[in-house]
Length: 489
Image 1: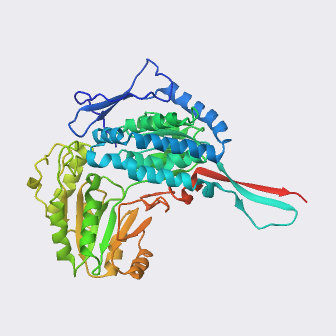
Image 2: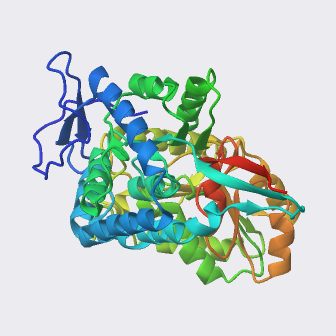
């Protein structure tokens, strides 16, 4: 859930013009973004009022009717130009991102330079294949094919933790498909929505094809329930996913829901332990563990358990927790104090139930109760009676258990309400494939984790959501099939 806070002084930032009409002077609602760096108000924005929302929806519908007539080549040129804007401004965008959600500045520009541009350019490159007519067997005297048509207006609700990586999964393919897009970004990262508007203005996208709105939760539900919205792409919590589903239940539309995770890893006895340790530590703690596909639980074969734990503990202690503006910082604050408090309670509860915390927070001077700054933690002597092994933590915390066999690892990995990604660390490809067939997950990794390949479908099972983004498959949800059956003989 997003929080409201009155906070302290503000940090000046560039103002980007909203993509909707001026606000009414009546009943102004102010959204404040509290920086986790120091608790200051980093940016304030007025929430859209009813008139602004109505204007945006009307403009989107009208713009989409013309946009769908454009050629794929025209759409590609504009989208690639928008990506160019992001790359040209990556450093500035990265600093904004650090202030908004606390990721160390040494990493934030790379959200644009690496993942964002990789996904955007890939989805642009496969659009022709994904949107091509589906040909069927010829019958004399008939011409038959299935055409992919845009849905209309796509409403994208994006989160703060990877604000560009999550939103680009839907924004670029939606526009490439001939849809109009309205983006609602998280209260924590409103500048990300405004950056999209600036990028598409730079690229020459016709007015109304892309817009953004700053909205509260009630307003989001109202927009989703509006008959002019044809598809909802939501990334967020399970609770938020239920709210989105409830809002569309009365309508004949669907939504793509990318929700939470409690992603497991299994380290077999034949694994390259040095490689497994290095990657799983990073997968557990990057972005302060605030990743839906981050590693939250690890199962290690008992034959290599002690060696793995030793390496994992030693590497964890090398992290530098501190001010994310400092180039030496490798672990920034969590997004807000309440999130750090939630994670600390999971740790404390697990310890009270018999778990052992291997990391002394005193090793991290910036760690402080009552602030977003939380030291990384590794818990052993854990089991599935503890929330730390079953409930989403979304923090730099991981639990590690020994297992005696592949069968035990499979059972424990599947003992979860979530199923976004899972990974195995082994030198045996056949074993990885065989075990992967039995694990309930959207993506199965071997010897890597916490990564999205844009050529592969990004999807989840169980409470991790439904639907799909990325790959050619991701275009299917953003279009509708239309059959042409012509008798010509």
